[in-house]
Length: 273
Ligand SMILES: Cc1cc2nc3c(=O)[nH]c(=O)nc-3n(C[C@H](O)[C@H](O)[C@H](O)COP(=O)(O)OP(=O)(O)OC[C@H]3O[C@@H](n4cnc5c(N)ncnc54)[C@H](O)[C@@H]3O)c2cc1C
Ligand code: FES
Image 1 (cartoon, rainbow, N blue to C red):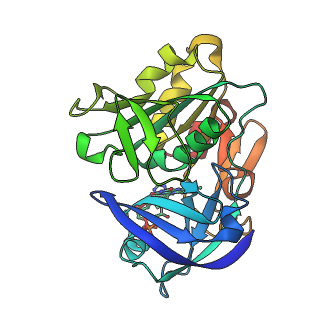
Image 2 (image 1 turned 90 degrees about the vertical axis):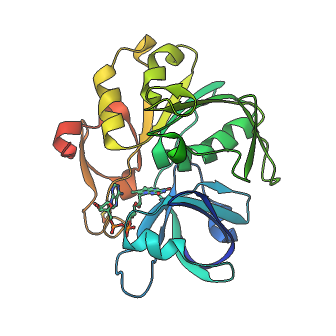
Image 3 (image 1 turned 120 degrees about the vertical axis):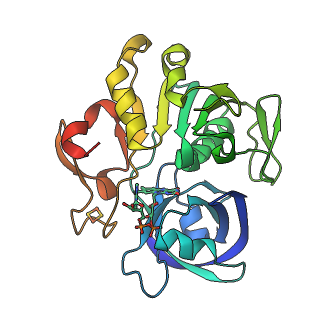
């Protein structure tokens, strides 16, 4: 874990209220794994650093993809190329692709797409097959691969920026209102695609995890790794503000997560739904 000044090298608004920032941070980028996160100091007046997932890396640079929801992310969204961010990371455990896994199913709800793209990069980089279900409420909130970073050709992604190749990713787009892609929710695809997958990974809002925990009926009841975007205090194991109840006792999301097995979390004791 390192604390570094990270100069911003690009900043793009990829959809309303969602920004993509690439920074130069070789010490963190070289070590970071998909599912890990950094904490960002968001100006002089916010004492608590804000956690954001590693969205992508190229070995020297790393990308953050974030939605503006409050003061910290608002501050971050108006930083410009040439300014420097104060980053601490990489933090947390990250996703684990098990040896022998060939087929990965990724399920993203809303901004939950952010860490799963790093995982897709890694999967494809290792020659694995990746199906990626991306869900959002409506078309304007659906992460658009064609937004300048990705190009979309008949459901297959390829990356234009030269960071890595994602040709093997099969994309399934879903919106609640059917305004883009399939109508429904990303989790609707879990039962039918679970059989295909060797491993399943998900990132999204709490109601999505609750639905998944309640489903419990996909073929083989395969394990699902989920990334908890828990509200954090210190981000480094000191305040215990991020504790969740698991079937193995209390765990800290910042140190022992943010990735957990879906079936490990005692949802009703950990969160108010
Ligand atoms: C490990 C981890 C990785 C994350 N990765 C990303 C990411 O890649 N992209 C991204 O957009 N966001 C991500 N988040 C969520 C992000 O940290 C919060 O949105 C951010 O801290 C909000 O800061 P703020 O100052 O803008 O909002 P605040 O002023 O702190 O809060 C504004 C509103 O958002 C709610 N809120 C704050 N934090 C969270 C949270 N963690 N989850 C749900 N609601 C929250 C608050 O309750 C409040 O209602 C991640 C969180 C964690 C723990
Ligand atoms: S955020 Fe302080 S212990 Fe996890």
